[in-house]
Length: 493
Image 1 (tube, rainbow, N blue to C red):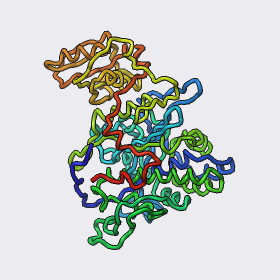
Image 2 (tube, helix red, strand yellow):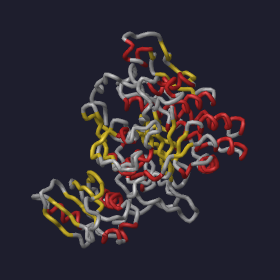
Image 3 (cartoon, helix red, strand yellow):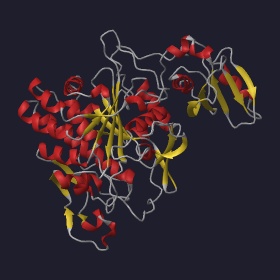
Image 4 (cartoon, rainbow, N blue to C red):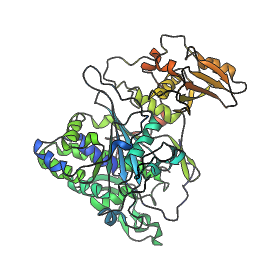
């Protein structure tokens, strides 16, 4: 994956920033005494869970010890409502947009975690979402990712819609969603007395505001700097004048900032004197799902994460490429990335399931099928959630290339069908070896389609976990751990 060139400038370019995962990790990683809870409870807002999709991936089951993987969606809203307009400028209006979205996956062993950054301009499928008037929006087959948060055009945004979109993309159930705004980010960085980050080169006023018309004064000097409040906000929002001037390049600096913040919080120690001002600043600007709607719930979850070493907290950007002024996610690389997470494997292949032996592939005891060179699309033709992802993992385990997973137009299929186009019968027969009893159906189509039926949902294979295709080294090398060199991997170009 690489940069093909600079992204075209927009006439009304808006500076972006990170807030989502920053505040979230602070709240999740730290613990606190009961005296803090009452004060923090009054600060936390929740969003209505009625907007969550009715067709969601299956919930992860806990093991015998009660441990399971947890997925937390972290969203940064750039609404200019209230105090946010003073920090980010009010010209963009109060409507909430998401410019930083990271899916945090905490592995079942609670010793590893990874944050997947999703580019705001990437084109994805946005499923129907609940509108303020109680109606549901139409599905968008190829909408810009950050537009999901704006569905309904409200100041608070639509976090449920973004959650629906991420679940559709990843095939994983999001357990909790957290939204943070400008004010929360600025006050939180001040509460920890600043964060030490590396500024790759001098940043000027004209970089922060391309419409200024001249270079202006230096806003941030090159080198290691301790930043808080407005300066910290400037650092994570700036796009121009650094690297390739792209939004995805800026995401690397956001990941580096977050890594430094986590290191700072852990280094200060877990005590009420440190935590009270920090948590108070964070929760004043949090909007969360009902499952995290109290300080007690937030802190309880945080306590389960406090033993994750910095080296085992990693960040990576979902595989992408430019598509004109927008971004395409690269398939099957992005599918394999999420498959690794579903199989409880870290980016470097470590079994983080909490079990002593890796999970076996569902086809391990069956005749080996070689799917090399065969491209497959998988559609869930039943009402059983998460089925397409399981079938995709099964196929990838035998080297098939899965282009996409989605729901079929009809959800009442009793028998799985393998659809194929002209000259594709032999490939369809190879695919069918993994789906005993499936019907082979010739159609005017490209590649091979698997439309899953109730027979697959009831099969032992559907309830088994699979071992996904190992991630390519050129992708895993792009990941950064929370203890990485602060001046490394700060931009593309």
